[in-house]
Image 1 (tube, rainbow over the protein chains, first blue to last red):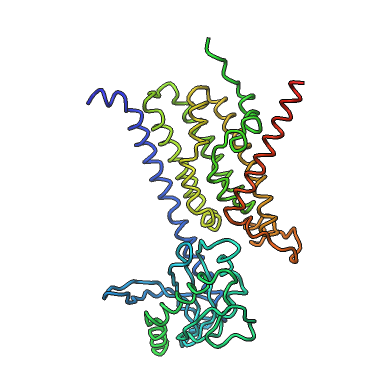
Image 2: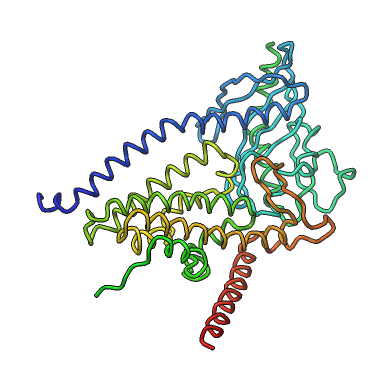
Length: 202
Length: 216
């Protein structure tokens, strides 16, 4: 035993010293990292809902399969007079390469989508990556929140049906993933109904 | 009589071209291929690697007389892992978008052969001045290599430069006209391999031309 310590003392000492140093670095940087994530979501919420001035965070519990639930933070978006102008909520799901994380904005009665923004993706650069561009995001505004959105190929924006958005050429899976992620939150997890109920109470 | 090890100035100069980590030692291939589709990504990776390499080399040099031969790799790894974690968390705190773009490749600096190689070859054998100079030279060489590949890949693949650079608007400065078709392959892994392969061939050709000239 003594022999092992005689040989390994440096490794053990370094592990201890560096471990403490890293704990210190983490303690200092973790608040900044979490603040960055929160700010990105808040900025997205303010951008997506017209007339937005401030956001308040509301915790909500949504059902997932097998009687389990998940807790998410929904943004209650208000204007300068503290009147409710809309809601913004996070949604995520599997894309082509990795998870896709979105923030989606809806009107105060939660009946219409006001916009969506991709805040995290690892989709193929130049292809699936285009879901972050304004040209892909634009058709989402004005769609009904309970609509089953489908990506339409080779259609001009003016020709899109009420349930259609423009698919990214060569990235059907990424385009469809975004639609599915939104549908899951608003329809299958009943978020649209819940938000409508909450705005009725105001 | 053991061979004389290069002095700090020689170490520095060697690292830039003659012993370039990518084009001559063929190390650090993974980040070279992965993050060079934009210039901003390449520069961030080079900066993070430089930070880790310089710090790790200096610490290894300070500890060189305490290293046990059969445990030295373990010690290097502990040192490198610590600095990589600091670099990774700092990036997530101060440059969140870049951190997200580089994804898993920053933590992967821990297994970047270039760093452990320099610790082994120079850091554990020479004084702090030589170790620091060696790390600086190798880092510059790495930066040069990454820039050479990323300039080609970004201009051909996206038509822009400095896309994603914090400060300049995210889309970068357009260099090729919009009408010019984007060579999409350049933004993807195959483009990385092609570009690296061709540039490696060019580097080898330059080297052999110089050798012939010296021999003549």
